[in-house]
Amino acid sequence: MTQYPAIPTLSYGISKQNQSKSDIDRIVEQIRVVGYAVLDSGFGDDELLSISEDFEAARAIYVDAHGESRLKEIDELNTIRCPLSLGFDSFLKLAVNARLLTTIDQLIFGIYTLNQQNGIINPPGQRYNQAAWHRDLPYQHFVSSRPIAINALFCVDPFLQENGATFVLPASHKSEEFPSADFVKANAVQICAPAGSYILLDCMTYHSGGLNQTDRPRRAVNHIYNIPYFRQQISIPRQLNPETLTDSQRQILGFGQSEDGSASDYLESKRKRL
Image (cartoon, rainbow, N blue to C red; front, side):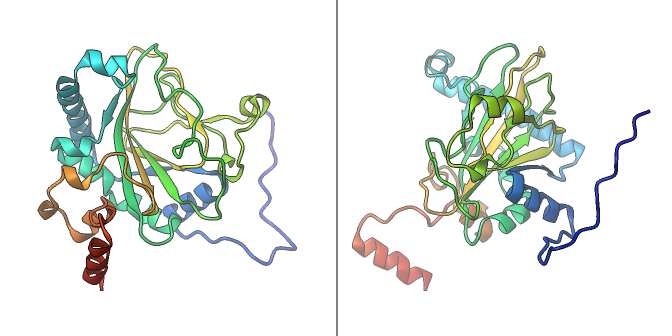
């Protein structure tokens, strides 16, 4: 039997070292260094079943509202835009999960808001629009010393090699350019994760869905949280009743973050913040 050497634990010439005291600390460090990590949501079996059922119900409502043929025509049949707006508690729970927000608190400095929430279906044996390398801030070629946006992909179903689990390019959030084809081939990593996990990415980390080679769709709910200088994909505050939300939920969901229509509106909104 082949014996492999143990990972060294001694060091010298080092005057600074990161410290981790919890699983969230370790996840935060991994995202900062390599751009991705897997977080257990903490949801129980009953909650996961409810999320799965609500996903299917939301999908049926969405397709009925917008038309299957129309969605196919614009390559949107495998996406549910802003499921938060469809009246299911599960999607709010996913967006404000305590372990998730505790992690993002350590990654994004100051206030952040939910830019978008989308249900994503990776259909069996087909190409779909997420099966291509991209950043979740697309067309952007820059790097920053701190994350300006975090992608939280909730696994409704297990993410497996067979069903096209997400591929990432480790540490690509630190490079402006998309790497060469040779680099991609040599360094791409596939992230397998159980149902109930969030796959977290620095949004500048290049990633891609894979080909689903099973006979069942793989479902997920994607979230993007960013510093409050980006317009939401769909205005979430217009979809929800603020009276049903806590102050912290309203802030995360973007209430009060819309642009002012005039100088007078700006001055009045600033007065209210004092």
